[in-house]
Image (tube, rainbow, N blue to C red; front, side, top):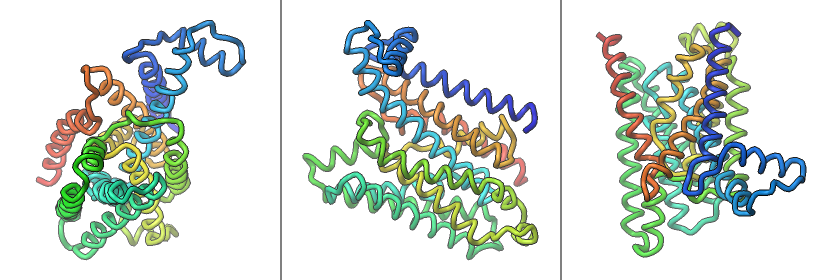
Length: 337
């Protein structure tokens, strides 16, 4: 690893640690960093912290699970975005544009409508995300003679609109007193309901998917080459593509099932990570995972501290991501011209 890449990884790690400290410290009940250290030290050693029991409850029962959930979801979306961008050789691709988030949202909304448990909702979310990405990819593969970027973006928009219609239909027939408010609030994206019980069903699929992508990161470098050149290097492009799509869709679906639709993370963070450590996937994927966790922590902390009422994460993420996407389109337009 070069010195600049190592410095980029250090910057991402420091950003994550600062985000964790800020997330624990700020809120309606502020907790200073020394008090946070005393509480954590007391939990590790068993020595009484000398602080009110309310402080320990806030750290371990309220903010702790939410911080871990934010790190997991942010890391998952950023890693999935980096994987999709590399797989399709397209800097404008993200889980949102390819329909993975919309498909997972439709599956999760259907699970909420059918009153499924957490595992049932996640299973439907994964199936919906996988089907959506498969449709987009198959249409793009059938039009290889066309502009790949344009085909993928337009197909993702069309498939996303169709899935959005399905979500609208479920909202229309849902119980307006119980199910509809829950679905509407969930679709806006939030980690307010995160608790220790939800961490296991959230962390298992996300960690499995991220580990799978990290194992494949060396082979993913070859996918940036033309298909024939990648095969001459001994890379089985077909199975590798399926494995990457499956793993990236798994982590996206688990994130959507737990926190709703949080857009732009999978688009913005991979580019920031690429700026720090370069395009090589052995460095890019770990950096994107670390940076994504810190990024969503900052967004979540702003969401619950900026106003009297908590702002949905999807709204804040769009406010940050939209200007970035416009700038990215301007850069891409120069290359097209």
